[in-house]
Amino acid sequence: MDGLKLAAKYSYVCERARLLKISEALRSFFQHNIGNEKIIEKFLKGLASFNFYQKIAQLNQKNVFDEEVISFYWKGSPKLKGEEFIHNNSTLLPIVQLRMNQIVSELVDECVVHPARIVEKTHDDKDYWAEYRPIIKTNRGLKLGKKSEIRAVNELNLELKEGDWITIHFRRIIETISRKEAEHLERLTKKALKNFNKRKEAAKKVR
Image 1 (tube, rainbow, N blue to C red):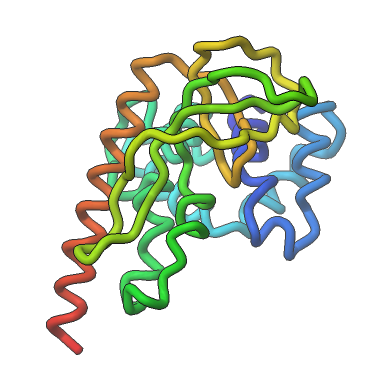
Image 2: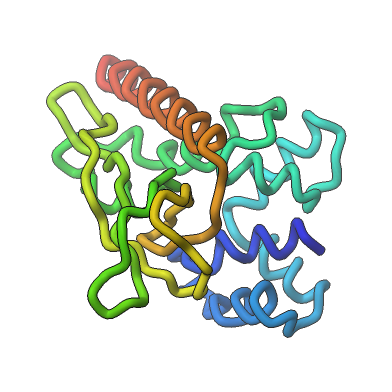
């Protein structure tokens, strides 16, 4: 159940979940325990992330919706086998063949799961300003930019305070994490971007 809820929590903001019109069902499930587990599982199996859950689960001899498998895919912790299958790596795969002028770094930035740190509440006292490192485009590819502030939407009404470490997906605050998890996720993201740039160079030579 916890694995299903975590998968639903990270997936409800995904573009495909919105297109399939299952976002609200996923949100009701993890936030209010509304919904049949089998139906939610079926919904989640229809998303691209499920293929990577399967690969990670197989490598680590775990159930596909084991909480550790889901957590590893989305934020890299706990440390399991299969770093190449985590979200911040797999989400870059479809755009390797695109030319750099066709890649919108803001869209990539939204899709990637970021570690961030709460700075303060916004004036409306609901959302938060959080410090994170955005993905930017350079002549050599994609990389993490300098620390900057982003308005992070607290759509899930989490109880947060200044200094808390969080994950952000599509500008929504998904959950709180430890500083150690945040640092590990940033390392994995840097590695994913480095691998992406290498694949991009290789693809350029083939054309």
